[in-house]
Amino acid sequence: MNEKIKFYNSLDLTLSEAENIFSNAVDDSKSLFHTPTLSTFINKKISSRTVVLREFNKEQRFLRFHTDSRSNKINQIIKQPSSAIHGYDPSLKIQIRLNGQIKIHQNDEISKNAWNQSREMSKICYSVSSSPGKEIIAPEGYDIIKEEIKIEDGYKNFAVILFKFDYLEFLFLKGAGHRRSSFDWSNGDLISNWLIP
Ligand SMILES: Cc1cc2nc3c(=O)[nH]c(=O)nc-3n(C[C@H](O)[C@H](O)[C@H](O)COP(=O)(O)O)c2cc1C
Figure 1 (spheres, rainbow, N blue to C red):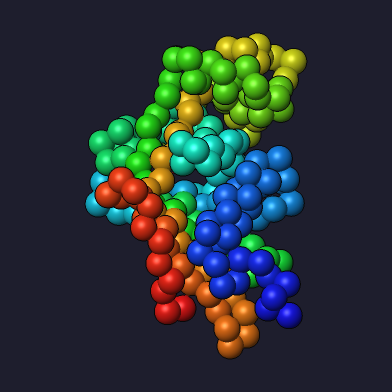
Figure 2: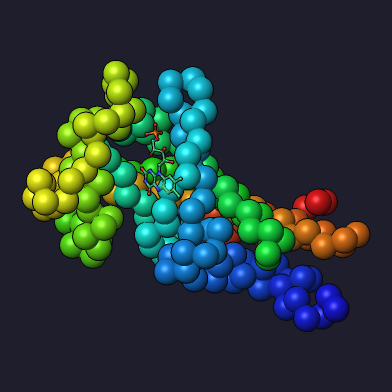
């Protein structure tokens, strides 16, 4: 049974498995890694939220996400770029944790390309009239009516989150034979280790 799981006793294949999971999750909305959790600092507190994975670059080790540039988290991330990603898919029985640093891109080549690649339905939410997270008296009146907006105007509120990771931890749950491993690039070259699950 375990022989069928190619990565089970191989660190190299475990890393490839993690990379494939994220690569496939970009276009597979059914993969739970399509919507991982991103944790960042808001002052001294940790704040976690679901985000949609838009790109995974294995060579440069980054994940791309999109967000509203008016969100409070933007300034907080610029101050404290250290952040983490978490995902778990019960159908795969795999948890992946990443640690890294975020760079925010707005009004530059990266944000322009990301915007141009986005579908209309993804662009629409950037036309909401005020900052996400702002307290309001009542929710009515903030729904976006497609006919009343110019979708391209949303670009001014659009930001790209580029999350570059230097640590990946992989956990595969399997009866009495779990497998846990770490992949660390923080000192330059990759150091891979098995860990006790
Ligand atoms: C399925 C799902 C996908 C989401 N995708 C994104 C996303 O790609 N970008 C984003 O900024 N927020 C996304 N959100 C909303 C965030 O989880 C969060 O509520 C929002 O960004 C406000 O978080 P903040 O207060 O930390 O700015 C998503 C929420 C869900 C439930």
